[in-house]
Image (cartoon, rainbow, N blue to C red; front, side, top):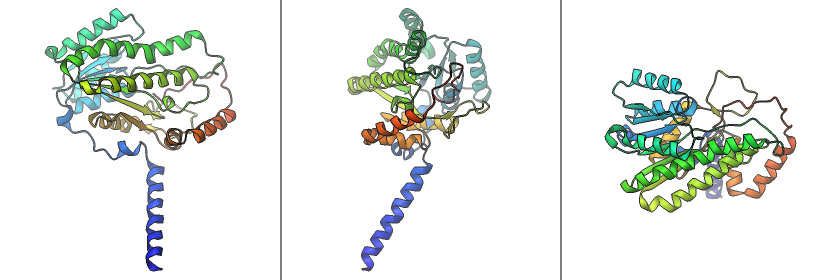
Amino acid sequence: MVLPIAIVAVLFLSLLAFAVVFALADGDFTLLTARPAKREEIEGKVVWITGASRGIGEVLAKQFAKLGARLILSARNVAELERVKAEILGKNSSCEVEVLPMDLTTSEESLRESVQKAESYFSYAGVDYMVHNAGRIPRLASALKITEESLMTTFQTNVLGPIALTRLLAPYMLKRRRGHFIVISSAVGKVHSPFQTDYCASKFALNGYFHTLRTELLHRGIKVTVVCPGQIDVFPDIGDDNPLPPVPVERCVRLIITAAIHGLKEAWIAKQPILLTMYVMQYMPSIGFWVMDKVGAATPEPSATSSQKKKAT
């Protein structure tokens, strides 16, 4: 009887250890077991980041700079882009940084000009990593009360703009037979969330397009990594009523870069209970739908004046 008892004890302790690790996890297991990025894996690579003037995009730019990347920073706010560039050069004087103002909601011809400029930087080195980070988090609203203006603006910024930019940039990557799209999506692109209908829909659409793109182009040298962050502490100085624990933005960005250099197809970055919900929805969808239906029933409808705190991607 000693051996069976010993086996049971080992199994119990293993399950207990797993439960503790999972409770403290801030990412999916594949991501958390991957080693961090090394400088030699990034040094000299051209990294183009949209939404680089603040939040995750700004921190991504600074961490890529530490790893020796050559940077192209894009957003609508030129002054903020110049601030980010100055801060990067202040700490990494040898870093090469170009500022490329861009609005994802503009015409395709304007986006084509931006792509041509990006490809011409650094003596026509070409873009190695295209980081689709820019996005819009609309005001919380019932699915039946979303305005057409909000819906169209959200999809133009979160979906149609990145797709157009990808369609214009991908041919250059295909000629080189190398290139990597890093897509900053969201946990709500995996798990629907009450009163975030247009945002959820845009992220589900983004995931669908880029996973399909990877399937079509991987054999031609093009990689795609879709990152789904949950609650991220992007602006820690702003108060928030949301009780869900955020992942610090510096930690989030380190995990994004780790996912990219390992070529992970998808990565989840979130603390509990968001991470557990994502696993349940992925592997036990019927239970996941039941849980989210209960969450929807228990969540009060936001008032017309309520606003969304920007702590998620």
